[in-house]
Amino acid sequence: MFTISDDEDRTYKILLLNEYRMGSAAVLKSIEEFGIIDFIVFGGNWNAATSDAYKVAKENNIALFDYSGILGALNMQDPKGYKQNGQRKNSAKPKDGT
Image (cartoon, rainbow, N blue to C red; front, side, top):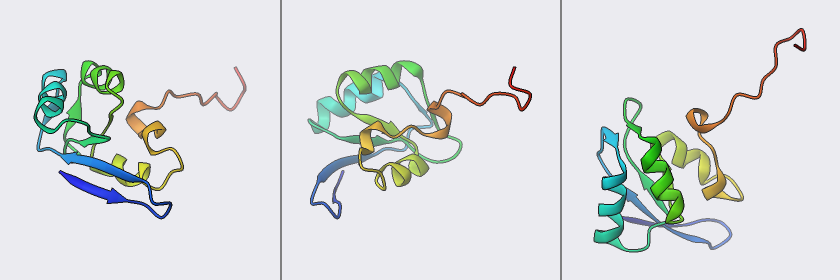
C-alpha cells in the first residue's frame, strides 16, 4: 500500500498487487483487507483484469489500472476518470467518413 500526494495536495491510497488476472474476488479481498483504496494497480504488460473486476472496483469508487495506466492517471486532473487504452471505446471513423 502506498500513499501518494500530488502537486495540488490531493492524497491517494494506491494498492499494488501482483495479480496476473485481476478478478472481482481480488478487488473485494483488497477492500476487506485494506479498507478505503483509491487505486488498485494489478501488475505489468501481460496482466489483465476482468470486466467484473472493473465493475466491482467502480461500484466501490476504486480505479483499477495496470502499471502504465496509473502513471497516466496520476498526471490527469481527474485521475479516477482516466481511461487506459484498453478501456477506451474506439471512436475513430474511417478516413472516407463512412
